Image 1 (cartoon, rainbow, N blue to C red):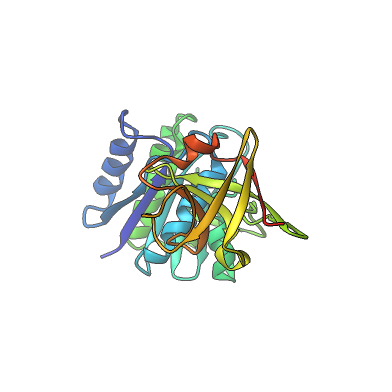
Image 2: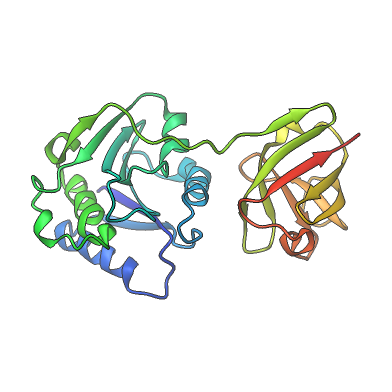
Length: 256
């Protein structure tokens, strides 16, 4: 039985996620539906790409990943299917899938044939998650191939999560996520940190942080996060509020 994993910026207050799941189960009743997250920051493709990158290692092989973080809905951006490694991705061609696809190596991209799939008549243009991506995911889960549903493309939109400037005694990176505990997840790989103490310089503040193997220390901590990235944590506190930083902010780390 195929599973469809969903990631969106829809939240849970509105009917959007339920509508997508209803479409999928109507067209493919035996499919498993699993939520990765619906708490991606609104319109923030990079945040969605990072949350998906964090989660993909624990997604079962052979699954379909349906992603809708789509500020360009209704515009000329392509609806796509991507085959990469053990996964099939369905969603907008805006870079959302690229960090995971890049790790898979070889991939194939298909532009969804809206008319050929019979979806054009019901497409509103404002809710492709329900009108295009959900039914296409269901068709794939019930045995259709990407060739049945679209045309091959040569490339897809790319998105770089890992741009870090490295200099003599400093690193400049970016905040990719702030989790529900206020931990600040950066794009700095843990093996780039070779010091026990750093100065953290944020856009409107600075503080010293010490290396820790857990979240139970005192003050601002440098912690190796669960995906081997540098996290800044405040013991029983909120590091994001303490530093005044949020997703997308640049951050500098100095040790000299």
